[in-house]
Image (cartoon, rainbow, N blue to C red):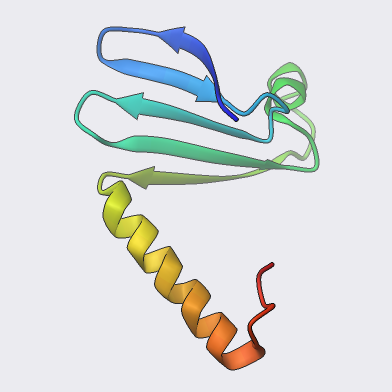
Length: 86
């Protein structure tokens, strides 16, 4: 699912092969996580003047973030039905 783009002593740059997600894993446990819309990362880097859309999250406690997202999913399924989010 992920491929390594660049390795450094203090961080690791990775991306999903399709270019729709990328991340930098840092030595201190933090993650810079990116999701790209409309066009994948490689297109957006080549065409920075286009109206590219992306989301960025800086996460320093991935286990806590996973727990919070799982609880959001559970609330959505409880309210909208068991197939919500699938």
